[in-house]
Length: 238
Image (cartoon, rainbow, N blue to C red; front, side):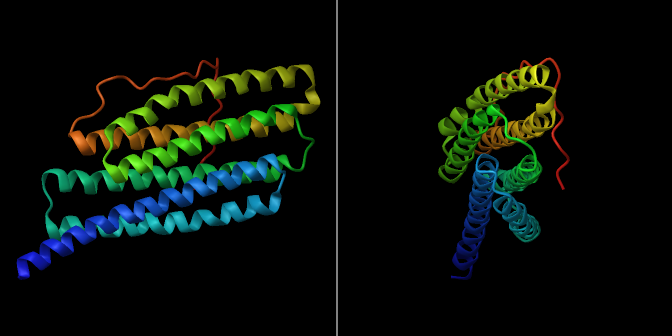
């Protein structure tokens, strides 16, 4: 009876680990959605609320870390269980970064709201919607252990890069044609780069799911569609 209880408790702890990750991902996805809305609607109050929400994602990451360490120390997991715990640690790091980049988008939204709007802002919600879908789908793939769905997300990274490249070029054109737009366009460039980086982290999670389920990394090189002649470095994440 004691052995059954121990095994059941272990299963419960692994399930709790996955549940925390799912909650983290949902919060980060909502953070990105709110940040994009703050940009489109020029809503600084919503942007500030979005930045504040990042603290909850960070708190859940600490919960994942503590639980993972406890499981490794007390359960001494092997094989698939060990892969699950290691993958959970890495996935929580990716989700935490997603939250950070969403907060950066919100921070830029506050600054963008202080200067005149420029037409290329219309491309931001397109990128944001695609990346939000990647986050949702990759989390669903994690919960279900669905490698095919994870691979579908992995392949979308190229489309995100292509949207970023298109917006990058459009913004450069605006800045050359009207120097008064340089400040607004620069904020949009950083916003777009942060969204592109969120897509990269969703792709990281897809790769981890492949490893988690099959025990091997994805054999192909990651598809990349960013053809900009120089990169806008993503902002530092706290």
